[in-house]
Structure formats: C-alpha cells, structure tokens
Length: 240
Image (tube, rainbow, N blue to C red):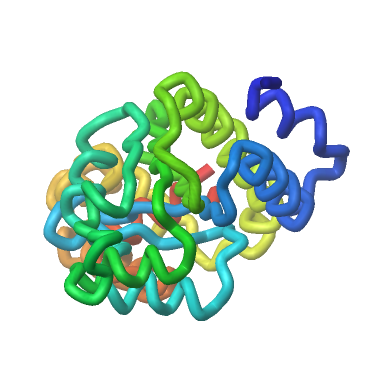
C-alpha cells in the first residue's frame, strides 16, 4: 500500500485549500477502511480541562453533536494517552468504550453511540511539534483494529495534514489577526512560561497592564483561559 502521507502530497495541487485537504484525507483514510476522520486540537495543558475539538472533519452534524454530548471529546483515557505520549492510540469500541456486541443495550452510552454510527474501531494519531502539542488525527470505521504499521502510516498522514492545514490558514489568519502588537508580545512570552510579573519586567510594563493585555487577548480569541489563548494564537499563526 502506498504511504498515506505520500498519497496526500500527490493528491493536492497548489494553491492548497481546506476543501481539497478534506477531500484528500477522506479518500485516503477511506481506502484504509475508515469512514470518518477529524483533525482535532487539545488546547488545554490542564488534564482536567483538556478536550478534543475538531477543526477539520467529514463528520456530519449529528455525529459531532453526539460525540460531545457523550463526553467522547474529553474521554480521559484517550486524552491522557494523547497528551502524554507520541504514539498512535489504536482502539476498538469493545475494549476501550465498553461496547458489548452480545448485549448492546446494556453497554455504556459511549459504546452504544459509537457502534450505532458504525464506529467499531479506530485510531487517534497525535502530532507533537517542537513548541508543544499540535493536534490529533482521529479516524474510525466498522472494520477490525488496524495493525501497528498502518497506525504508523496514519500518524505520518497526520503530520502532513496538519502541515497543509496550517499553510492554508496561515496567510489568511495573519491578515485577519485581531491581536495588537502588545497582546502578541505578551502571549509569546506566556508561551515561554513567563508569569505576568516576569513579562512586565521584560516589557517594562506593570504587572497589572500585562494582565489587562492577556485578558483582552483571551477575550478576542474566545478562549477559556490564558493557556487556551496561547494555544489558539499559536495554532492560528497570530504569534508569527
């Protein structure tokens, strides 16, 4: 079988677009036996608040809403494995989500939901960049769990897909960057682990002023907290 990441590069023509990427990834994972895919982020570094959020997928609205309603976007065994490791997480509905094919009605709601939508197995392939966590390629379908070699190929596809998606969004995001120069400066330093006091010392501003800049940036990005704002701004290219 041709390597998935090579298949992606071969299918896309310049200029790259999100729709072309979506179509190409859907065709590639479909050839492997998966019906659904999603490129997802996990913006929070706090495990208690971490959750997967789709940013490009072929999910229908009903599935996306149900995925969140059943808590699958923050299912702790999966999220913990993705944030804390770099290897693909291969799953099937029976062993990970408790679905019992002999007693479907007595199975946990997450397992019943996945089985009802034909998601009996799949994989989550994490992508970790040099500056932190980037995202996850999630795939699912009706077939048996895939082999390790196939999962490795999917992870390489994940790296390629996130790279193309970033390139598609980069220039548009830069043109539409809502952050001021000072807000970007504060977020860049916060990304390096600096406190408001330390940022104030570096920028020669008061800690109160720094907090105001960070609060304003968090509000503009519709982020839940400072850490989330840093992750979103970096992902969207606002800090470049």
